[in-house]
Length: 292
Image 1 (cartoon, rainbow, N blue to C red):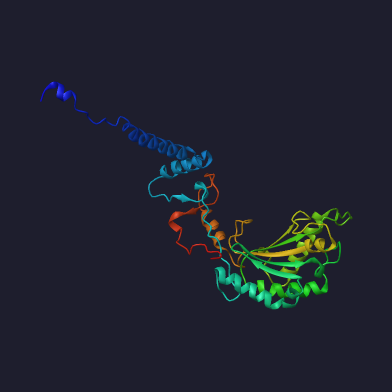
Image 2 (tube, rainbow, N blue to C red):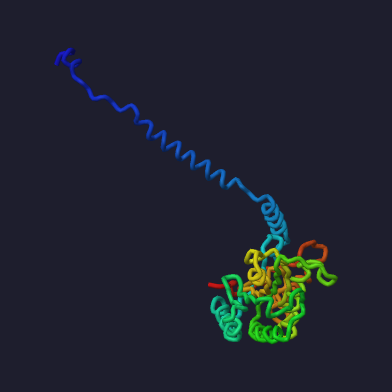
């Protein structure tokens, strides 16, 4: 074939943009790489220092010396207690059993809307309208209130979990020698309920009183009815660990945490650390359970 004829042949044009596909893949991978690098670059310096110091201390120990575990690593070795029901059940069954027992003993007041029993995965609560407990502007319990609280205490007495009583008021100001503000009034009302529960046989170490004044209202204070609803007392039984205390007040005998602290007292006094648990004495326990 002549050169001219070959020149007359029309070749297909090559795709010159094919490189863009590889370039786009490369840019995508590069973007993913920097995203990953950025995500792992955010380090909590405080926790890193604690971990670093703990690792240094642990690996610098003499061979055969027990490694200390606990607050050095920022880890709590206390097992979270579990909710115990009136029939010895735990978890969700425990809360339901306790709630059912309270509802059964408080049928009259629940029907009148004076008492409500509620719960979730964190606690079981009994809300009581202040009108059946206290006179206006007072924190002294009525005779009727003592009977109601005695019945409720009889149910809670069969459980082992911490109980906190919260007092709430409306926004009507009070200014007396005994109660200069609603803070004092709400706290005094909560304390009055706690005192009766302790006298009814509940371990006082399980109890606590909190006053919220008018700042946790459930309704607007724009009517007599709504103000009445805001004046209330709530008894809450926690379903898990007592977040306000290191020692677990779930029994009258020595707690597991107290026994562990006694063991750690054998550590040399010149070591300036918080009480920790020796790893060779840590036994595997049942994992914490709440409402399931």
